[in-house]
Image 1 (cartoon, rainbow, N blue to C red):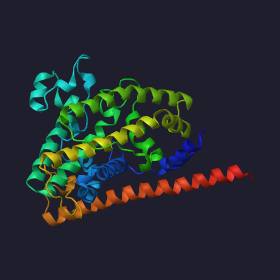
Image 2 (cartoon, rainbow, N blue to C red; image 1 turned 90 degrees about the horizontal axis):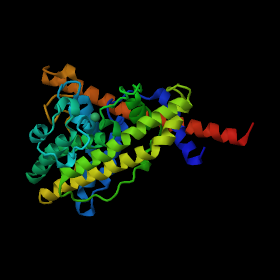
Image 3 (cartoon, rainbow, N blue to C red; image 1 turned 180 degrees about the vertical axis):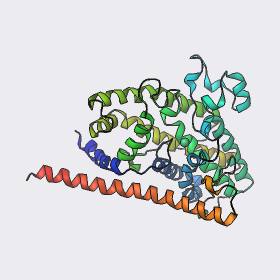
Image 4 (tube, rainbow, N blue to C red; image 1 turned 30 degrees about the horizontal axis):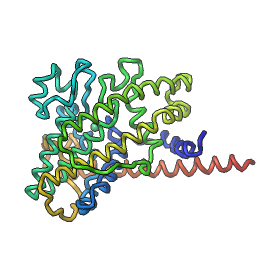
Length: 347
Ligand SMILES: [Zn+2]
């Protein structure tokens, strides 16, 4: 085993303790890491945004939590071009959702609407920046970040998103959540330069195509790793092999998500006329930018004070969940390294 890989393997023990964070996308930790990297990655002329984007990192996980209260939220997180005829040029579709679904013979809830959701939120972010409504710009820009990151997860771009068509049920969470939480480290994120996007919709569809092309690679890796582990998909052998086969792809996709997110934020700011960027907010509201639902279904319709405190409680739970997950990875890493060193030294 290569030393670098052995180091990455250090996090495996954390699998045992992994906390159930926001499901259905990269694990919550990766969404936050992508947003932080993207915030740092904006061009120098937009340097004030680097501080401004800091409170936009945690809200990158909220859209997964809105699913609990908003039945329309789910399809915003994926787009599955393999539901379309193979010769379909998705870049040639209309950036206007209603027009695109007239062009495609597809059902929005089935095929997903992530690209159009991003375009819509990009427009809202731009308008809000132009009007110097910076709170709304931050909320829309943070929501947009989630869908951008999701589209860079290849299994968000295929109809076989959970291996249900190939007897690989559960592969979605095994790769994007269990494996990445154990092995992926934020230091590995290396974004390319943020650039102005002349035609965001075509760019987004290009990201989708790249991501979709990786879906079969990930699904094949799951089969190979499962075989190596004699069918034990809960074993160390399985996850080590899976990471060996897919780690570079996952790292490249997460880095690309950070690059592309910073390009979208930069594009919004340029199109808004490069307005002066204010000091950052302490924190952003948790409610959905689409429907206004909170992140706690129990809070719907309740008295304002009570609902606010329940939301805060939920908010605290998320923060502590993320912090706890990170702490466990660190502890598990050092335990593992200690064990390896003791083994190397001999009795
Ligand atoms: Zn999601």
